[in-house]
Image (cartoon, rainbow, N blue to C red; front, side, top):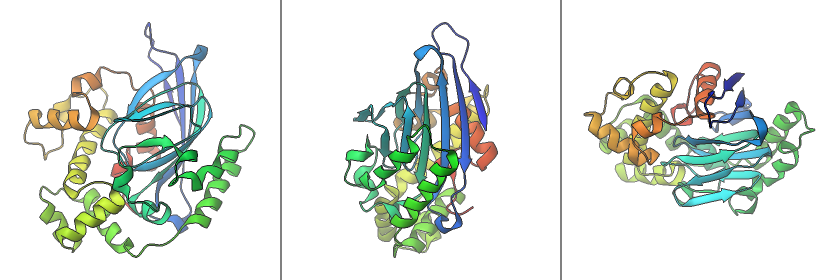
Length: 300
């Protein structure tokens, strides 16, 4: 469990963050990043403001305060059940005191649980209870948003529903090869990634758009960026030049990519308070072994 304490500044709210991570049962190997529970306590009715890094698709359920969230031009406010597709942009949000359950879908999980192509929902956030591709999960609201339900009851509800909804997919071997190569390898050319996955470029592009949400090239760039951002966030006080991935030619290239993936430059981002992301990444790295969804391997 990780606790985060707000900065003692004039305008920053006083808050505490607690994170708990639960391993999904083995029947779901490769499907989910984790089932995680987060408690946010903001004093005096305040709210916190933060930006989540690009990640895979997620569903999140809130008990208490509900967020105002935005990814690009897509936004939702006041929904207890928030759903997102895979992203290559930051998720900006505001949230007050609340408890949240989150479920992150790895590409294999997207293939087994979501019937629509991932690229059609890329960089979107919505009210999951009203969206045709996510409303199948809406029944979880009854338990995950019930303040009287125990954590064990809530976890069991997730496992039961996912077990009922899971459908296997014929592309699973391809999905796992691509995902493993993206996390383990450092590829500069799409042709190199395709060769490592043992498939043609055309097949690689189809698999990536259908289950990962983006083109192979964009996925490789997102992976490189995520490694850099995670290194910076886990080493508070470090400089961006120390956190930059070795694949960047120079700081100017990194700055351009940072602005593309986070909609601001590195100095603007580092000047902001990160009440949720900082403590969540630290806890995730320590407990789960990986600080960010995009760095999770398809099997543990």
